Length: 406
Length: 145
Image 1 (cartoon, rainbow over the protein chains, first blue to last red):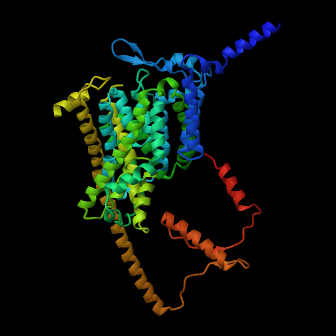
Image 2 (image 1 turned 30 degrees about the vertical axis):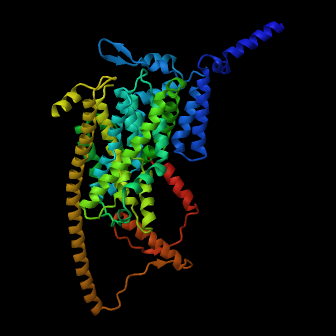
Image 3 (image 1 turned 60 degrees about the vertical axis):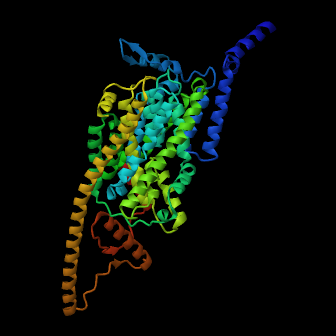
């Protein structure tokens, strides 16, 4: 009887997750679990974008617990049919997938990021941008980070899909990064969507640390002290025309940017119309929160030990911060040019807000400006390039998707 | 160069199968497409912004002129009838002036939002026994879709 008891216990132990740690490569799972604890700490104690990093880090924990079977990276391999047509076997996933596999379909099918954009649109006031349309240019310049990082990644010998996915981190926009990387990356690439999302959200949280030194280095004290006048008031009709106009122009020009820009602008129209209060509120709150949970936990789940514990992960981390810095620098430099052209009416500090990261980047511009002149309010001026940056990075995403094969 | 870009957009980059010129044209095409797109938006927004701004200013100017004319007329009337002051709202006994002022300010703020000029005619105690917050909650929950 004792023998039977012992053998049952041994069998149970063999089936348990703990045994999974001792099989070949099991130590990697332990490392990943520890990394997830680190991100949880950063989210809870340090307040690093907790709404996203906490679900992401918990997803990371769940996926690396051996035997839990919540997410299977092997399901997401592209099957090839004929010469060039490849697809994912969603039927198989629906039949055999775990909870996180099913939820991850929303990422892989590019459903979540546009829905998040819907909520962002419903929360954004494009007034400062309409009042000063030149801010669009700053939002465009800051996308320089994306394309120069593409160059950097190519030099490091990454594949085209990886280059595009890493470069998009420079757009400083989480949903856009996930949108692009989930479309470009397949299971055969050395990095995963989770890696890109982790880097993007971590750097977005670090915007107040990364940006100010670059902003100070590239501007003179005199430029930083420029006080900008008040923006003109924008009428309701202008605010109503804006989302429709942007959607039509951008969707016709770069069709692959249409899902992101279209949903962003639809959310904005819902809000500005003033007649869909209930829907606008749902888009801003309930829908956005639900999608954030799904997106966070599933993107976190893609960070399995296999995909993260590679040299490529280090490359993503390094290239990501470079992408951010170049984006900031490009924005500031165009801001300086505009300052010269307008004979000192534009404070170049608002240029750095052209990387999306709404509204953190605009707040950084405000803070750095106030260090020089305490009564200078750059916030509304910086919100222009900031929201232009969201549109700009969605456009850049569309460009990347149309250039790189997926 | 143009040829290269066209080639790039027709045949997509994939795997490690790319050259230095491919990458350079990605950078150049990417940046120029983003800039062209956003410059288009700058143009459109500036044009319609300009139109609306002008119209608003015209409206404002017209309004101001009308106001001035009205004021001049009022001044004339005041000369002939010096006692016509703004009608004070009828306030029920026992309601403090401060509270009336707060209500008037709230009404004025609401009026400013919708662009209408609202006048406070009278202030009376509500007869209903329901707490106003509860009433608001009830209204919110029972309002049809």
